[in-house]
Every structure is written in C-alpha cells, then in structure tokens.
Image (cartoon, rainbow, N blue to C red; front, side, top):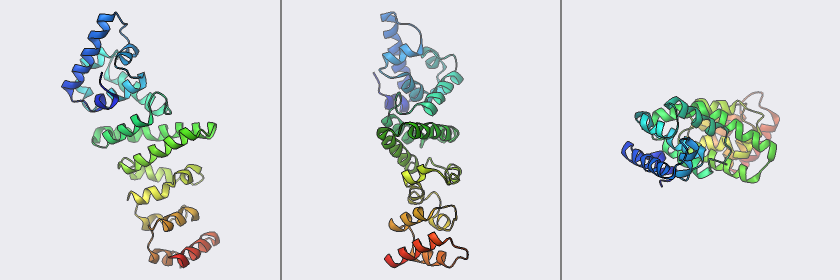
Length: 241
C-alpha cells in the first residue's frame, strides 16, 4: 500500500487507484465500511489517514474517494484532519509525518492558509504536554518540528509576532526561538534587536551567532533608559566582537 507521504502528495489518478484498491480488499475480506477499517487496510493510523488525505491538495476534487474512506463529506474529513493535527502529540502522527506535512504544505497557498489557523492550537497542545510530562522525547520532537516550521517559510510574520508577545514563555529559550526568527529572515535583526521585549539573553545569543553587526550593538548602547542588565551584557559582548 502507499505510504503517508505518497498519499499526501498523490495526484488525483494515483489517489483514486490507492483508495479503490484498498476498497476492493475490504470488500473481499468482508471488512466494515468505516474509516478506521480503511486506515488499517492502508497500513496507516486513523490520524495519518485523516491528515495525509485531508492535506492532499487535490482531495476536494474527489468526493467519491472521500465517501469510500468513510467520510460523509469533505467538511467531515477536514474536521477530523484538524482534530488530529491540533491534538495529537507525536503518537498517531509521528514527527516524520509532521515534517512531511510542512514540506508539502509550503508548496500550496491554500493549505498554507489553513495551517495558519491550526498552528497556535497545535503548539499550545504540545507545550502543555511538555509542561506536564517534561518528556525528553517530546521535547526533541518539538524542537525538530519548530526548526522545520521556521525553515519552511510557514511561520508567517503574524504568527511570529504572536509568539514574541509571550514574553514570559520558557519555550522561547528552549528553542532559541528569537535566533530562529532572525536566521530565517522572518523579522530583520535590526527590528528584533532594538525591541525592549526581547530579553538580554536572547540578544546575547544573536550576537554570539554572528547575527548582529557591531554597529547595532554600539547604537543600542546609546539608547536612554537602557535596562542595566542589558547594558552590562552589551558592553561585555562588545569587548568580544
């Protein structure tokens, strides 16, 4: 049977063939008509099936495929897709599936628009799980996901500004998120570096990564009412440049 990636990216004809083949097998075995049974026949979890088919850019053209998979409508498929994407924490959708999704979605403006509405809830779910369990495997997968998200261009400025407003979030430090933002050129370093809401340690990391020209450090030091902690850090870093 086709893999998660193949179903996700399949053109209409290929997707038709995959689903009809699975449906033929179901009829031969006398399996039930549900979506879970189709997922089993395709060797996917229910979450993998919902997201691979639901994020396929061509699926809205294939109502017969949607029905064969056990969904009443495209809206029902999208509802299940969104539920798994926003609530699953690397269980039914593994990290490889998530990375494949981001690579694929980055090629489709329509899917990219859908993703912007789903991302905040997904990250809220993952971060709540990390705070509750402090599971190192979840933390490492979360870091991989966020690096892929920023690297793929799917982290739009509005999304990034929302993240930066969370000034008391420990996840910014966990991810070195401000550095990711600058490295991927989402917000210019000249903008980020002069924001009071960016913590001194975040600015120190930017400097240490060679992302801040000496002239910006010197200019920042001339600002009135600069917090003493940031001033000490900048003066120390200036000596090292």
